[in-house]
Image (spheres, rainbow, N blue to C red):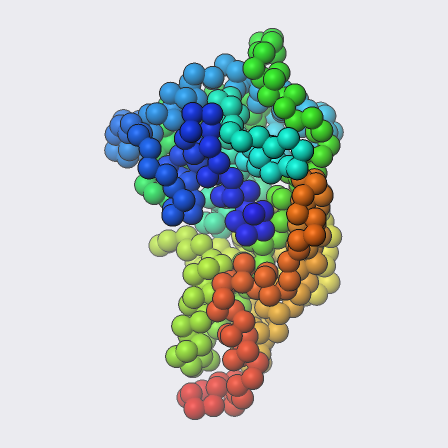
Length: 403
């Protein structure tokens, strides 16, 4: 699951105590999304959500456990600070990203571990699944737009974080629905999560129960780190390959009609189109920088070192642009995509193995290099590479195609 989908998408079909899927309107893949009675209202909040439908049913569920959710978040946060050796109360956005990965990993770990797996998620933990991924969502949205603001080294106020979320579209789902929480609600949770502002006694019985549900926190953190690294490695593979695919697509006369179709299909699988007003080359390079910074934050700098040694990223860590390397762009692109996947594959296999060990399940199952090719760029990558490597070229263009 963690390799094929990533943790949030993999576990979002799981059910809460009341029989609803914990992913609510955003449950993926859509074929597994169950139709349940849900009350929606048109959002009257100012900003990007104005006029969009919001899920009032899910909001009521969160509000029913709101005080407990703040305490549970604070308890998890205190343990996170201790484990990470973070002395100040405020988190940078990268630190918040790592902490927010606990939101999806918590139900995934409890549902998938071999010993006493749960069959449904209690109300408090369901609320944390909804709330806790906030910093992760902000970082992902900015990353996909090629915005390096997430690399800001200092802490941010809740108001600054809210503005980033609202401005980037983080508060609107891919299906066009708005986050149901009011601005004050979001500000309060961001302040507790990122700046540690909860100052009341941590005496919630339900929050304490939820903490005790994880019997081995070292094992749980091993799951969080391994599965999160795996997700970042897959995305890094995608964007490094996307640079080569984009260069092929941009070079006039470099591809035949069949190859053009394969390149377009691969790009559709591996690259998130940021929309109008964004330069694809810049977005790809910046996204690679953010991914490497996040891997560093997860104590995994060896990936960056390996890519630098192989000349797959430049001094700015944004990746080389294949169309500026020189020579036959077809050969350059094919070689670099093979090198990317061959270099990152052992890291993926290692982290998938660590994920399975933390769950104490699936330890006999692993992945192949072909699996990474398909996961990163879809089934069209293998035939595309074969064409690029076998078709003769003349003056940098395929035979029969004007140079």
